[in-house]
Length: 102
Image 1 (tube, rainbow, N blue to C red):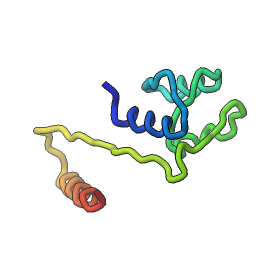
Image 2: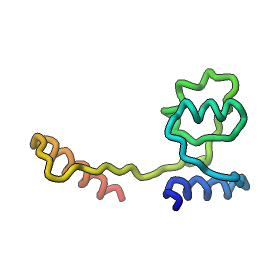
Image 3: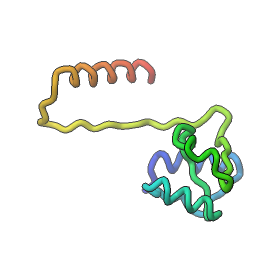
């Protein structure tokens, strides 16, 4: 089963007529960067994660789309865990703000 991120990236690639053989989740950024440097494939990262690599001569940086791509982030909180009241307030605030933006 593909994640929503994988499906999103595949659709973006198809619109650009890029058809990768496979999309693989590699949880280690350094390992993925090394594979890209060796010409094995490409990777997609947010701009803020790429900043440390801008000086690398073996890497080419390109935008996927002109408007950028976005994905939802999720956070799960533990049940039956007691934390300070300000955490409850912060979670309530986030829910309210995020619901307003959807």
